[in-house]
Length: 406
Image (cartoon, rainbow, N blue to C red; front, side, top):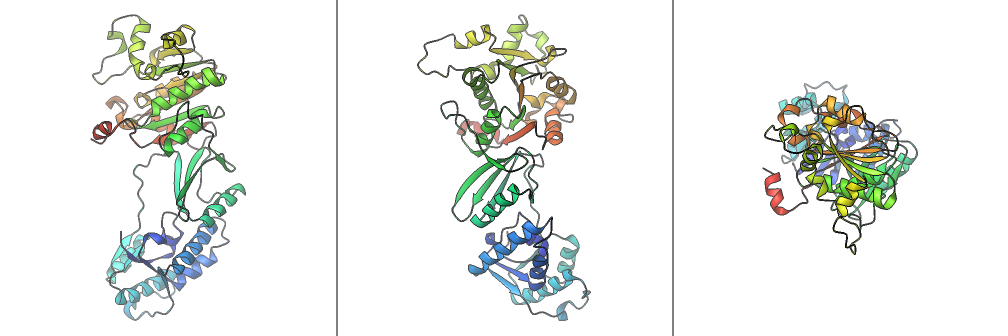
């Protein structure tokens, strides 16, 4: 990242740009005028006011200079009636005096012109690690900006385009602390987490997942993530909490698509249906523990299954049934195509919810190009009935991380 930059107007309005990330920033008086004119703009007003506050803060720290005087002597081929060319002329003359600066812009035409003038230039490109919606936004703002953002959201101004049930991480750069919320479509609401005795989130994404799993008003829950991120244990522990402690649902059902890496199908395994299903449900069963630490019941899991508090099934046997009053976990959901994810989701009946857990990066080859989990995320984000959280940290063990990162 360059340390000394000259920026255009669009860069300052970009929510991904932070003046304080740089050693020194030059801006033109033309940019100041353009930002000032956008303060009351319906779409860009919030970002313009945010930019002005950032400029003020950088000015107090002597990290910014506004360029007023310039000529077109060194850039006489530029048309003088365009604001961008005035900004470029200022950048050129500033570059002559400070060869360490980089002209930073997000306009490719402006970038080409700057390059032709011999100015060291870069395009400002913020690339997400993955273009898949992760269910949350992370913002780094000062105290005033955070207060203004919360106020504006409560008044129906949604400058950051938060989606319904999207989570937000607000890092306060003044106080070096973090606030976490969920956007309910009208305002930010605080997380409602289970008692830490049930399960405690190990990071911010897990806390988002626990808030989502705890919310009975959001019936479709997608908890995605890679190896060791905790998606299954969080979902199982919260399901057990719902049926045993809160009484939200009558039972919990665990479903898997019987696909394994070597291509074997469930029909080739020995035993009856329940025995075949049992082997596929081991990832689920390992987390079923009696929440009462003083209990001496050594048959806790068997009792749950006998009393039909816990049920298990595979996608092969779901056609034609309705799953009512249940907390449903569709595990390894990356191994579902569009047809199968429709089949599973359409089984969900009255008073039920469904939790899809999975990692599209681990999908078997037959589901790579028709991945139902990815399609569900992309097409249902922002739906009031859907919550999505992508867990991005392996919390299982340091050993596990070695293999997860291969």
